[in-house]
Image 1 (cartoon, helix red, strand yellow):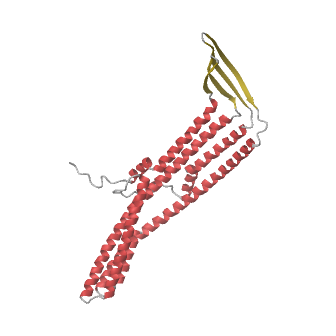
Image 2: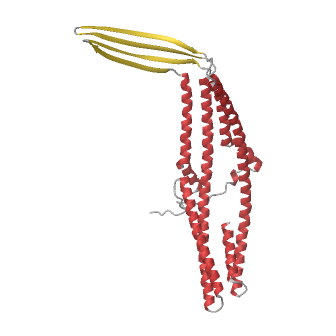
Image 3: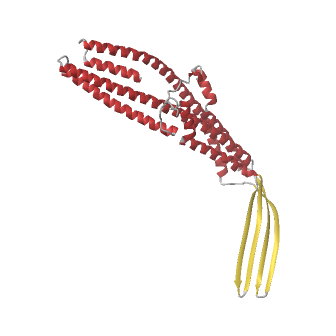
Length: 383
């Protein structure tokens, strides 16, 4: 039987993103919301189609030995011929709402996948920090043992032992806090990805996929960001919404046709008579609004205000995207500089720690100097 190595079963960042895309509850809820919005187009198109209804009735009356039985059934078809273009504009408004919902879904997808990347890297970071804190506890435990040994042979002082013991206790507390942070990050990962994190492989930088400059990033965000596109489609939906509201001020014309059959039986004893008849009808109805209590006009004004608000929301979305892109870009540049500096700081701090330990052996440094130097090394590694 072949043994599968740990590296072979390690989770990758791409695998975690795929799981988040399929399993995330918030994302699935957003998809369901888009499907709900999709049905608005079918609802709007129903205004072009006829409505068909069936009806039936029956009754039985008995009085003084005479019974009357009556019944009827029929079908009625109604078709709107003109409604002030409300159906036409309603369809366009519904389609624009669908486009906006789809862009909103894209925005949700991007946010969820970004959160998944952050959660993935947070787990790796916090696990490594917890490992560094454990190593620090082991190092300080050894320093305490060394200080106690020197004190036992008269080369050290009780103060050295107390300082080493205090440093070890503080390291234990920091290690416990780091373990808690790692568990918290794992819980967030579980919430976003849908599975507990196992052996996670470090993610590779996405530098090749980034724009070349901040200006390029701003141009790309302003052109393609789904939040902006969603707000633009919302403007289109509100434009047609105004036209739908204005359609209520126009006349409407409809036609209705129906067929029915009725039957009656009345009499008593051996004398029973039947009366059966068929009926067909066709008619039209023209409605011309004259005064509607101001409701239609107020609805038009309300729709126009919504349109104005939607246009302002486009500017809000553009400003938000611009601020977010600028912030992300500057944070990325600062992080790159910090990583480069801290890598050099780790080497320098480790070299300084080794020197302080050697100097303490010959009495030129104290235990506190060693503890401070070790703290600098751990801090640099974490950073």
